Image 1 (cartoon, rainbow, N blue to C red):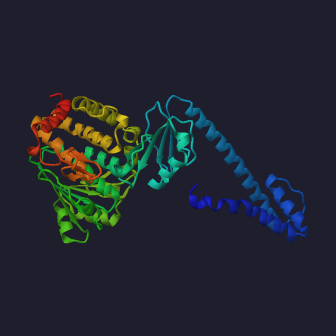
Image 2: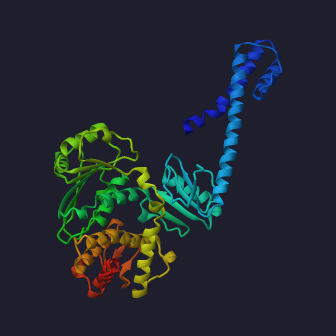
Image 3: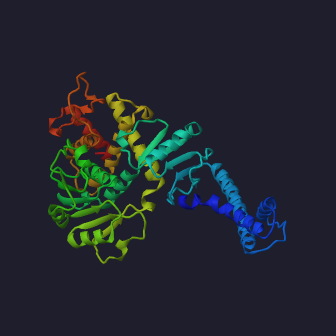
Length: 453
């Protein structure tokens, strides 16, 4: 039942009472007797023989309200019993969301969807309400009951790298997941091209994530030249990332949708990505302009307009069944890889070995590195790039881009340390060729651990 209809339920429930009371009053009953007789209709009991059309309408609608209440109560009791039984199982997850999204869980996991009603007996809890504020408020309102549980909060608007660290919660970036899955699906490193023209069309947070993950994952050759072109009405990404340094031949450009130059980019693009559910007019226009490249448009459901267009270069992405899986949300394998790599690195270079003691930014940095490991494995297995020094340089470029995306820049801290987290400056945010041999060796070790070279 939608929120709009829920607002009308109380009024609709008492409407038979007023209709019946009016009917009995018009039929000659006293005021108090009219009220009592109308109330009795809810219990399918007639205490007066008076009759007219209003009384007949009230008699049936009151009984319908009573039946509905009984059925709703039975449904609630049954639902709560099912939830209780599922929570008793070894692996149970409560998913709090406002939509009809269903997460694809492993068969051994029992899932329940209680709306916004906390089911504290569940072992794990996934919160992904309509807005980030609502999700965070729901967590804080139930924080005491959720202590000691595994809690995952989906972010739609807040940038993962800017949110305050909370050791009791695992945050996951929903738009980031869509972007990550998209680039892994496209896999441009397998295309055996060094020059790419990519256009991203859209004003939303997803467009920004598509650019970010493209910069972090699309690294495969020291000779690559990828042109990323954001076509958007707002300039937020351009303003936030004015200090972006790509570290190689890749570059970022920005256009307004009404510029002729923007449509020239689309016409010559190898890949066009539409970060919103496009209107028929927009999709047809881009399809008419972009004839040689591939077009990817966001569509969370299987039924969409692209299914009816006779264009072989059009592809949809971001379907809910592909995005909302337990692996994408809980990131078990990815986090395990990140933890293992952090442990090896920390033991070698005397860092923090306890994953739980790392702040959110450092955790995400390790996860980003683990994510790039999959690209490196592809490059090695497909014999696209197996040179350790070249791959180490790509890893350093990725590391720098991760920091730049999260608003860091090159700088020498006043305290003589390598970095200053308050000022967000790091001494190693520079070209690979400018690093010391010791720092280069760190990047080489990462690559050796990935490919067992």
